[in-house]
Length: 288
Image 1 (cartoon, rainbow, N blue to C red):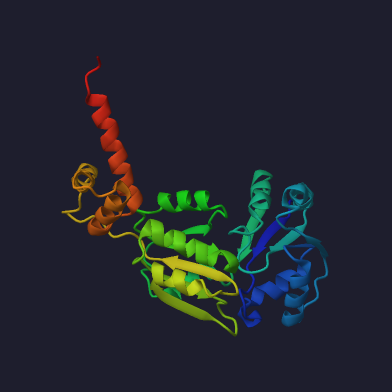
Image 2 (image 1 turned 135 degrees about the horizontal axis):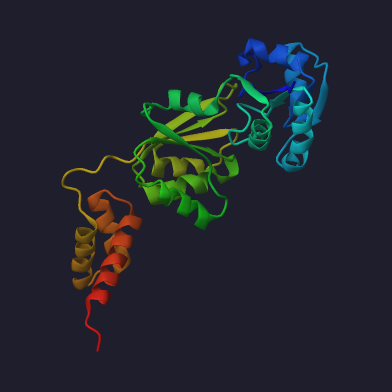
């Protein structure tokens, strides 16, 4: 008889948002694996519960090493409850490795549903919520961050990101560069907490606001790209417009910016169109 792995959602701010089952699971578990045992202690005090089982730490730094130990406990019949600092385990938090290990061993995996920063931010953002995609945290390095954003530049679903407060301004500035400064977004901070704030506006405006410094847990919601219109310029047309401006004496970089703004597309799309046109032109030339 194998055990059960319980992924337990925890409050994202207000302890009173905890689902009733959470206290019972924490009290009855054979093992409670917590991302931060100190935060777990505060949570159990708020819930008025004392875990009877063993408490172990399970965070990014020891996740790979501790997973086999917990998987073995599950295989031997233990009920293991996994909690992270806030929200659902394995969603931008430790947990995926343990779930995969449990599934591989045929162990039952279940969950205690709880508050979600992703869904809460979507609900209060004022942006379309019928279709969305969760992108997690952006890379820390600027080049990698821009690359990830370019991959999503034409995504028509609403985008949801997590971000650290000290990187928020750089992330918003990069979004404004890739998605366009006028793309609508919402910065949701400290959701369900005392200083909860939702700041809505164009990405360019939000980037300037964030330059003053922002604190707390951050979730960013960004409107998806507009559907291509019937008259939207194709790549060849974009390249032709840039070429016309270059022939008139305008530097290529400025021409690309103006064409992108006029066509309502990211600068990268116009740049790629110009490069493709140059390559095609070179390939069509007869060899000597």
